[in-house]
Amino acid sequence: MLVLVAPGQGAQAPGFLTEWLDLPGAADRVAAWSDAIGLDLAHYGTKADADAIRDTAVAQPLLVAAGLLSASALGDIAPGAVAGHSVGEITAAALAGVLDDDAALSLVRKRGLAMADAAAITETGMAALLGGDPETTVAHLEKLGLTPANINGAGQIVAAGTTEQLAALEADKPDGVRRVVALKVAGAFHTHHMGPAVDALAEAAKALTPADPKVAYVSNKDGKAVTSGAEVLERLVGQVANPVRWDLCMDTFKELGVTALLELCPGGTLTGLAKRALPGVRTLALKTPADLDAARELIAEHAA
Image (cartoon, rainbow, N blue to C red):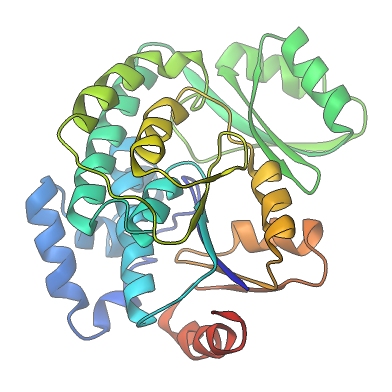
């Protein structure tokens, strides 16, 4: 059984979309999306520097566009399940048929803008903690006033909070934590700091008519497979201020009997977690079109 996954913010890198735009029809498709949402995706995916694409309002639609573009390059796919990490959940919603591509891009554009506005209220950020015991780490973060915003499994937890709180964490690591790595994001996502963005996203969601997912849609909220399109959309709204439980998503992959995990462009982060947490599961990350042939072989072996 194949699970198709989409990465979240921080996975982007300068120029990562360049080779994908050389595929037949890709440039036209991205140009149409750019016109629809008022953002030059081709420019940001090919020419912009790291600081420009770190901007939340840019990074989020860029990542969803990249995920959808790489998925379409694979042709017809029949995964047993789909999931996305943070903003990747919008990509997953489109892959599951809950939203069409245009609705997904429209929603993520509004999400990015709303989260950028919320992030501008207070200087905040996120940092990954590598190593350590999860219970000990979470308790230590809460003592410092930080939120365990992403519990990713495989020994990785992401803390979020103010810059002062993150500086205190760097100076006072939890027992067993080897490193604290600042992430390429512009705010404390999946925390109470994103409360204003929830309200804006709820308003945007009123204009959408979601369909029920055609395949198992595994949610960041609790790792459960959600069967109602309306519930998927509701979870996408609340998700911006709630922790991402990718560890529970991977637990569900195990329960579903997943044998292969394919990560859409810009792949690498989620396959890295899966290699440590899902032994025996084949993994492949789509980084460039050169990975497509290997991905198609994986799909042929493991998809329904």
